[in-house]
Length: 263
Image 1: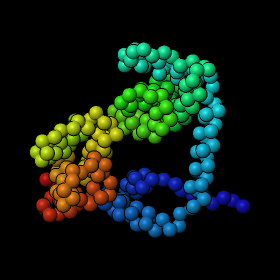
Image 2: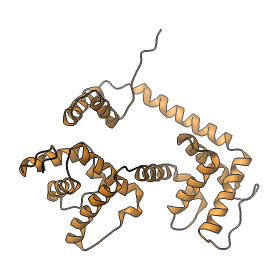
Image 3: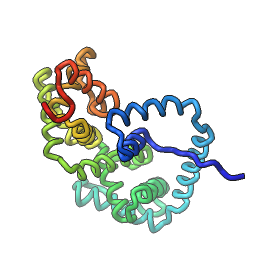
Image 4: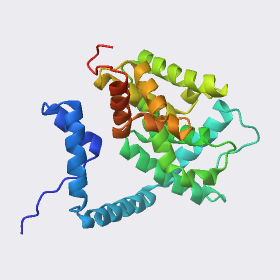
């Protein structure tokens, strides 16, 4: 029996496909919303199980493939990063047979998976994995690495996307305008540029504003005004997505702003 083809993509990718086919931005978003709503009831439940099983098997294989040489390399990188880059005192390199060796092997398995996922050679990937993980710890505790895989991936993706921002100056304009609202209302300033996982949303929001032919300042004005009823500061993640676009549309309608660059 021939297996029937199936599809598994994100909403944003589907919107982009519609854009490539020549549909307008609003029309693409509207059509994808309708498709997602109708398709939800017809989703392939067995796919989730298969993906989960595949991932578990993949992780197990990574642990088994974490050779002594790999673990040795990762242990050296941790030691070098702490001693020479972070200037930690009174530390020693973890050796085979030591009490933390099995933990290092398990972390190395995760680091190998990180390398494969982002197509990095082991040395470069291990350095990134170690440095990102340590940077997310207030105090270095080796075991913390075991629960940090998703957080390290999220940080790496955010830093990579921020580094590839094609209009970083305009993103900075949007970010400063966002902060001006917060400072004027609270007097408090938190530099989100130090938290890539949050700052990356300004890159995404700037891109979304560009799609709408809106200036970053008007885009941010819309988010604050339309969320004012909540009496809360909009989280950076609220600046992107379909809901954010809807807030812009309401704001532009109320203020007679044409979404065609003429404002």
